[in-house]
Image (cartoon, rainbow, N blue to C red; front, top):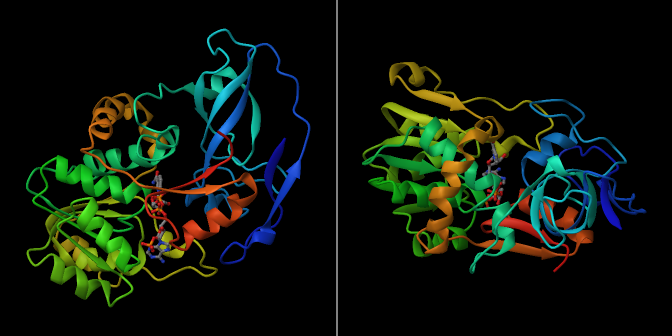
Length: 333
Ligand code: NDP
């Protein structure tokens, strides 16, 4: 079977040479273990952080060993009677074609109807839960709020904007990095306004899109987006700080917002969060989101790259904005 190893720690933007495709023998499936053949693997921004040698909220990847990450696969061999062959499971042994795992490390998924299995890596998986928890719990979004989300055409952001509309937001504004993405937000996902942050200063474009200010900011980007959102915030606005992708490839510490004083003057709440701390919300999330996705109230797009060998390119492309919706790598059928 084949797997991808990290062979060098990227300096700045990752390069294909930082990864290697490695062949290896699969171990025997022991009692209490499961053999999974992966159908698709996830490439996510947080993986860039794990490629540095530094521990943040998770351990870094080790060099010359298989990387980890979200994946969905089919059980092909089972040493545990609760997981029959053919069952579909999600787990964290991505970046490879097969994995032998303790049964406790896989979670069954009831793939049904028209929803593809890959959705459980995106809209119905970790990124969807991130949007749900961030918007509802961390930013305490309420009916009538004006909501701004950056990285709006991506896996998390596209769910944030739609969920905000479903929950009665008065106005939803998104930013993204191309005209095609801006059109997608407005025409396909029902955003009220959207702009391309590459077209001009974020502060100016946001002020124009939100003349009455914003009540909620869902931050996927950091940097000048965060500064602009502080500038546009109404008193008592609530921010869910989810990611800071504008700095993930930075080799030097980046400057913070220059208008931090406004956090005090406007009595803003800024809540950083990591989705894994909110695993207890998974049941609520699934009860609400599976029907909403099934009946089309929440729409989703995937950018699918074929072949495990192309996973590093998919990851690099995602960091550079090459995806609309969730970037996934299909490794089997
Ligand atoms: P996306 O699907 O949004 O893909 C990443 C996107 O980031 C790209 O498509 C690109 O879109 C955008 N981007 C890249 N560089 C920049 C930049 N310099 N400025 C602005 N946008 C940029 O990824 P996810 O939805 O999976 O993740 C979104 C964010 O949420 C990330 O910051 C991630 O780390 C964070 N996250 C946090 C979690 C948590 O628990 N706190 C859990 C999951 C995700 P564009 O073309 O618009 O530039």
